[in-house]
Length: 421
Image (tube, rainbow, N blue to C red; front, side):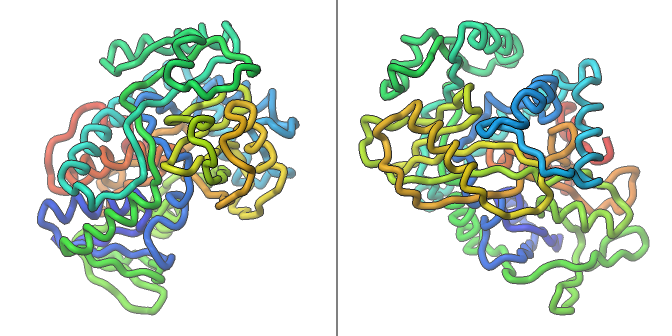
């Protein structure tokens, strides 16, 4: 089958690899000059399989109200908010307060994450040294600065236990066994360790997997954008490029982040995705003994600190500002403060890379996976809207979408990601 994959971020490249391995003729269309240059460029550098959670939650609403007007607050909102932002927030609120919605979505995401973890390990075994990502499998630590926060983390473990996901609820001493460089003068009551989670550079991973896919026969067409989906007899039969070239196809997969929404809308389908802005900075590690060993989630700043070989990446913020690419210095000042409050002496403050990117978020949180709804355009497939967990969920998402495209049976939990839910 001839398949066009739109988008060469981590989700598009991973799906292209899966489809190629299943014998399909795959062409990937990417508007930018290389793979992994948008949301996959400099994300939080973690594969947080046990720490996935839906965007729409009561905790998010509380965080937003409590921190909106604080400089170091994690939630930011451009004022006045656009009509699109208001609509997204209202849909988020509706999902957050719907009884049972958060738990059902979290369980589905955790199941997908576990499948993704296992598939990632298979990819690593299959490709060996060709799969470069500057990462490890040393686990993720969620810190608790207070005993109240530690109790909250403990309350979140029941589902992890039921699903068989490895975890440890630690006291402060236990946390320091895994991250001995944590500052002694910063508050610490304990934490939750997710031992099977991992770290790495998503950009490196995406580019090395794209190289492997190209060597296996996948065609990548960069600096080209899809401007139209050609539809005949209730099927997508072609894609029109901005060069006016039209490519025929048997199936199309939307993996283009926020741009997936625009393309879906052009054929009368709704893909409710909002570009939630996040920030990161990458710094050289000057003293390994003072830096994190793996990934640490700081509960005070809501910031993630991750070791990447001889670098440290710090990421944070949830900002609703449309597609504004401005890099306010205040955001990076907060990231610096968060890093030095937990790992003083790890870096000299010299920033190697300052970045902001747009996580393609659905109003409830789970990604959009599978065929278009209601039987319309049955050869148009979605693999998009992964929010902050694109790399984490990419291998599992690609596996299931590829199987669906081949008509294979899927597990029941995948229904939680259906388009039009």
